[in-house]
Length: 245
Ligand SMILES: [Zn+2]
Image (tube, rainbow, N blue to C red; front, side, top):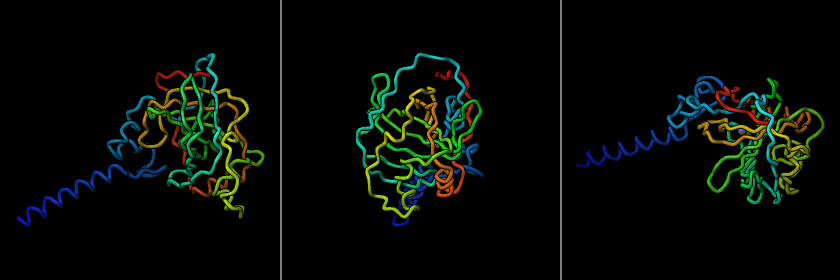
């Protein structure tokens, strides 16, 4: 009887172990766990290989539409919690910052950087891209992408904890105004896509602003050095999607 109980306990633990392993399936940006293998690393990463509406894409507009205004209501400047996820440096934002799109409100949850850019515009790659990840109460994703161009120093990047530390400054001073992330022009591309990292969930509404934001080459290089590798998923096929501008 004792042996039987032992076996049952072992079985429970080993199946829990398998479950945990697939929940936290490891993935990477190159090699055996790189983007072309994501869809086979875990069952729940299926969409990475089977999805028809994957991101990122090359942004070439199919249709010049009269698009609704994207309204930023980033009204709660504040501190953030920085985290190196192993795949990007991510800034987790406190509640109270929204975008309004077609009468719907999506809350800014976090933003993170990719270098080089994930989206391209007419085949052109940019040195960096930031993803402002929003969700509504139904947990629908609404992501705003901004592309970077090298130029003068970027004020908000200087305020991020890992950038400040490298400059010998206290990372906790000054609340960050998220409006400083946004460009003056709200002209954008709009399409239907996915998360660009496993599990590559679809149904993500993507907006990529046309006007790039500026950061210095040193800041862009600093981000890349901090992470230590390229974290951009390759361009995915458009399939039957229409890109609006
Ligand atoms: Zn991203």
